[in-house]
Amino acid sequence: MKKRFLQGFSFFLVASIGLVSCNDSKTDLDLDLDETADTTKMEQTNEPAISYSVPTPNDLFEIIKAVGGELDMSLINSVENKDKYVDLKSKALNFGVYSADLGYMSCFDNGIEFLKYTKAVEDLAGDLGISEVFDKTLLDRIEENEENYDSLFNISSQTYYESYAYLEENKKGQELSLIIIGGYIESVYIISNLIENFDENSEIVEKLGDQHLVLGQIIDFCAQYADIEAVSEALSDIIKLQSVFEENMDYMEGTNANGSNVSNDNDIPTFASGGSYRMNQKTYDAVKSEITELRNKITQK
Amino acid sequence: MRHKIIFGIALLGLIVLQSIQAQQSCRKVHEFCKDVIPADQQSKKWEMDNQSKYATVEKGKVYEMSFIAYRDYVYRISTCTDVEDAEKINFEILHTELVRRPDKNGNPRIFKEKVSIFNNKTEDMAQFYKFRVEKSEKLYIKVNVPISGKSEAKEFKDSDFVCVGVLLEHSKAERLGF
Image (tube, rainbow over all chains, first blue to last red; front, side, top):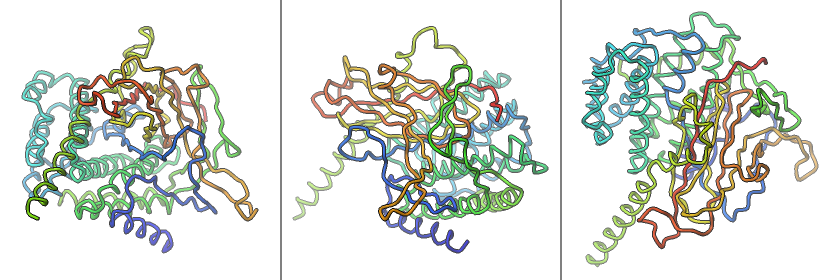
């Protein structure tokens, strides 16, 4: 455990001094691993910088709904808390939190609070200098579609994507990193609390486990901005969460442990991974505890 | 000295501004990737995945992105550039695998390596590809940007840069039986 903590901490330290920019995350799998350079034979002269894409909370909630998740309004962050967020860091983190809440509510057909939360997000966007994302017709469109949940879900998804693109284009890496971290913490907090009794065969539990992949992607992305104090602080929190996942999950060898494998499902090629992590009761308890602490910290509950 | 500092700041500002403008001029290029998909396959079941990307890339370079593929979806990847009369673009999908092989000293080791799982060269440079994954995992896409041709973006006229888009779409998949 100490070794892993040191590994995580040293990664963070390296990232903090700006030496890590776009390198891929290094994940120890409890095996005698070595990670070598890319072995593929693309014709290229220089190793390209990687651009990291992060799934949005909406993507996650869409899947959670399909596998039987439900709406629990007690899990979302009260809009009354908005006035507590006075500095850029807390505003950006909670822009992400409220955006995730919007995705959750609209995915589960609750349009009643949608307008109120959109206004909160819009206020925070103004403070973060990204109000251009919210065109003048947005609130009108929401009012017109208050009962049309598919449209509300699309609006929240589109707004999140537009915010992401605007921040990326305008080199606002600090705000973008914090928003992504806030959205991630809120969505993992929500799904971990939707699980009443741990069942390793539950699809929601499986999705919670998948979030360690998303977290790795977020860490890689945010490491580019780790020389900014607010980002490095938030990064150290989520690196700790990543170690909670990795220290406790079970590693399962894949069906293609001896090489790449492709099967076909209705003529769709299906790729088998070399191996994957699996949730267990211990991981679930540890992740739920850690994410609750993180969520309370950023929402100042 | 003072003039040099002012000139330096102005130059830096100009570079930053150009960089921002360049990125903005490629805005939503990935949406044009839809054009490479035949009309009979443009059904509403395909939703744009928010992990789609667009970027400004130097001609002849490789653009690489990574994303998380959930096992719950079938994915469709299409790539495009804004290069006028561009030839078909080579792209490749990779994932990481544990590979057992000897290290430099001949000792058996397990290495974590990126391995190609699809290259459109094997499918007559098809500009889109549908697939799914058995377990959720991180995937990589490499796009070989054409070495010649002019970008349609005015900002890149007579420059070495073009716009590249990677459109990711997903549709709900049937549950796999494993």
